[in-house]
Length: 409
Image (cartoon, rainbow, N blue to C red; front, top):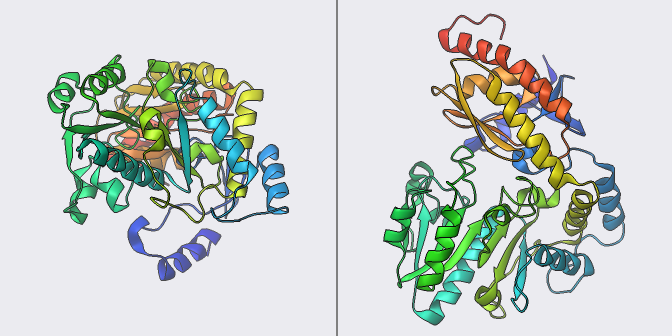
């Protein structure tokens, strides 16, 4: 019996079935490569869902986390500690806010928690102006806890757990006219992803976020941007909204911030910076010292190694190479930086993911007709080229799966 088969049997006996049984048991990583329990190696093109910004076992993160855990690992939020303070200072300084504009940070452990905090923050702000309605986007994803889920525009995962107490109106993503028709003087906030990640890495049309900012300005609503997946270099900018020339009132982060350790952040800007009063929210593990040490290291390495420019350059060449691949299953490539999706001509994503895995590449069938690519920010052009070169055969194998003619998979 293989090592995977043994682990799979144990998983099925003790784990809840919400994930099913994962198809691979990973045991080790180095850089952009991973190894499974049976010794097979893979090029990681997913980075733990856009989390492992610096790849695996990066020496700077190993050193920083080891040093911090050997010094002080946890204090709770009853006590102040400098790593968290330094991280908040760094994150707000990277916003490049106008002089005199306040920005304040709440730390938590996940993106869902960041959005829960943001929901409470905007509701607190709304109490002062008599508003509660939030405008969100169809197919948007903001988390699976009840507050975040109430804002998530994917009916298949939202509706089984309703009804909710949040007043939310959903509009088509990227449709300025629909957004303008929904936002008025009764609107508390507009919640958008800078690119819809779980919908299949779907960027907005040019000018969409700027139009949302303008609508919020004209009606007194808050602009809340969910950058849980897109921030901290994923698109080649510290924050993806910076490429659009807008500044939100509320910003949520997680995933790539900790480079593999759990940390999330909700940042309030301008009027939202001081919406919380003492005791309004909290998190025992939020912004713990070890995760903050990792996050500070992620920011340091991105800066010192010039990874923002690297992401833009390698991401553009990666997308160009992928677009040159000709196969009936592949109809296009979309996304920004090192956050891309292969757009398929049919609901074949599960077959393509399997063929990629068999060929030694880890990707994600994020939608029935889309494959998500979100490799570590340190991936090389040569590693990307290796996937591009392998993709025609991968697609051919996936097509054979669909036709029922593939042998030996």
